[in-house]
Image 1 (cartoon, rainbow, N blue to C red):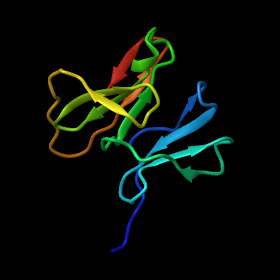
Image 2 (cartoon, rainbow, N blue to C red; image 1 turned 45 degrees about the vertical axis):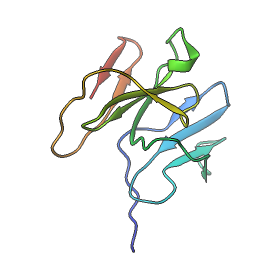
Image 3 (cartoon, rainbow, N blue to C red; image 1 turned 135 degrees about the horizontal axis):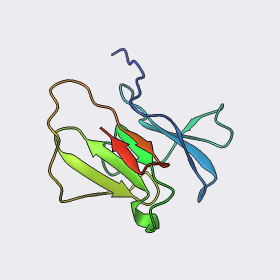
Image 4 (cartoon, one colour; image 1 turned 90 degrees about the vertical axis):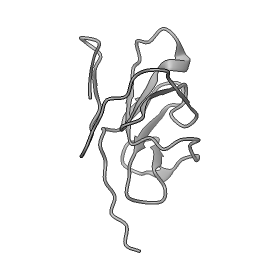
Length: 111
């Protein structure tokens, strides 16, 4: 089966691990990490599929700094970007594609 790598969010810098982190879809390894942003290796396996991830460095709770939109399922948070906890929040319906962005200057999430 042919695989095609796709992304819905930009890589993020995680200062706690000193790694760039990147979530993709369309291939077997969906979480990637890099020390320099140029050379990437598969990261640890996640406990949940996450395609739309952002990092909020300003969240006062380190356990909530990674945020994921789960298309048609709701949202999840993580301390490290691999081990996720679903939130008890309403889902945002999608019948096609989704994206997730975060503007830390305005505290604005765009989904």
